[in-house]
Image 1 (cartoon, helix red, strand yellow):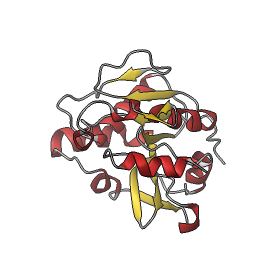
Image 2 (cartoon, rainbow, N blue to C red):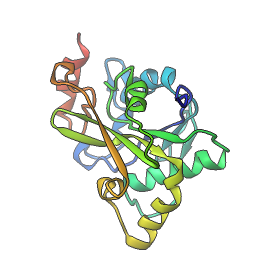
Image 3 (cartoon, helix red, strand yellow):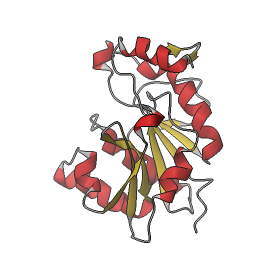
Length: 202
């Protein structure tokens, strides 16, 4: 079985945070640390190289930050393409890249292991997380072999929806149970902070 302990990771820190009133919501403090720091601290032991995809002017990050390879704020698909092409250009030898959002501070400590277990012999295979009755398209393993097809879909078809693209290929869902809570809870609105503080308390 292919070893995934050193899988590269793309942290999607895009979006214009309109529901948060603007600004970079992932830099807001939660429990004394930024939301992004919560995400990075959890994912670091699980992955190899890390890239932060953001169109903001971020300084002092502990990992490289790059804007979308396609201009115009085209959404998370453009960020995913950016990550795939970035790691390919670096000579990444693995088969997949992990993507995660920068505003989900409770991602699981076994995220990579569980998503990797969802890979099958089908190629190319995309694996996405599923919890609380819904799929999480930005918490996924993406095959590097789809980079060309993704660029074509965005540029030639004007495609924006992750699932529309993913469902063209072998898509597997990995389930988190109700008993495990909501590990992919993301902070979008100011009122989400009070709920996040409650989730952080235990």
